[in-house]
Amino acid sequence: MAVVQEEIESKYDRIIELKAFDDSKLGVKGLVDAGLAKIPRMFIHPQHNLYEKSGPIDSHSNIPIIDLEGVKNDVTLHAKIINEVQKACENWGIFQIVNHGISEGILEEMIEGIRRFHEQDAEASSASWRDALLITITPNPPDPIQLPLVCRDIVVEYSKQVKHLGYTLLELLSEALGLEPNHFKNMEFAKQGFFLAQYYPSCPEPELTLGTKRHTDPNFLTIVLQDQVGGLQILHENHWMDVPPIPGALVINTGDVLQIVTNGRFKSVEHRVLAQHEGPRISVASFFNSCFPPSSKVYTPIKELLSEENPPNDK
Image 1 (cartoon, rainbow, N blue to C red):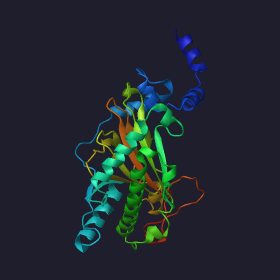
Image 2 (cartoon, one colour):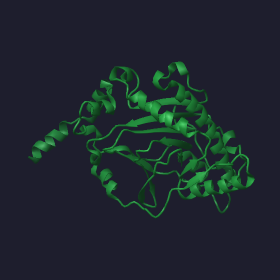
Image 3 (cartoon, rainbow, N blue to C red):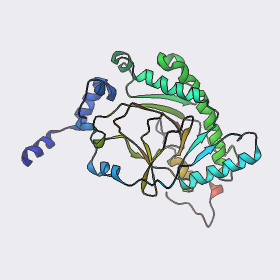
Image 4 (spheres, rainbow, N blue to C red):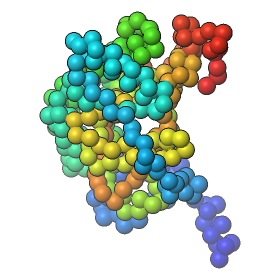
């Protein structure tokens, strides 16, 4: 029996299966809609990755929630917010923000717009889009004509507002490091950006796979809008912790580029998304100073943050 299993293993070609899946243009939702009872082999993760799912989650710590109310017009509140951003980036690499200037109605409509896009009939959605919708935010706003009609208006509006919020966050991050507010903006960390709207259908065998495997973001900063289903987790002090959905809130996580330019002072957070029986799960991640398109630019620590006591490191 073991010999037969080994022969089956040797004949399996994941690349061929992935190509066939891609050519079908059904996406994961198409498989679920077809009544899938077991997930295809190409989605099954190695046991050492899945074993992590049973690890302990620290319930005694809470991911920071920062209220941005008054950040632009109250000096006392502004200083308090800067301090909270500093601590969150140094100790967590992630925080949630409320009263950030994007209305809850806009956030809800964005989630619904992405849902409408992915829940079109197969012929409409498979022509050029499947389980993820990628839209450029900067340097130029998206061309409405090129956007799907079912979510066109809200995508244009959300893109405009999240870009503005990104500029505000760059200022807060600069000040949290003792730099001038425009420091990161002048370094053009908001020059390139896009958002990725993802749709995670319910999974018949969530114990065998992950929605998104563990990783850090290779960019500067990410703003995440998530629905109320949940599933996002971060690795904090060797424990996987849930990032609980909060109505009206946005999740902010620091990326690899921010960790590099701050000489490791601000941490790039490792995170993942669990597959779940409940679904669909919808999220919109806006990446600033993205690695799309790929760039050969080399980043180094900001000189103002270096000293004899704090020399450049390689992390």
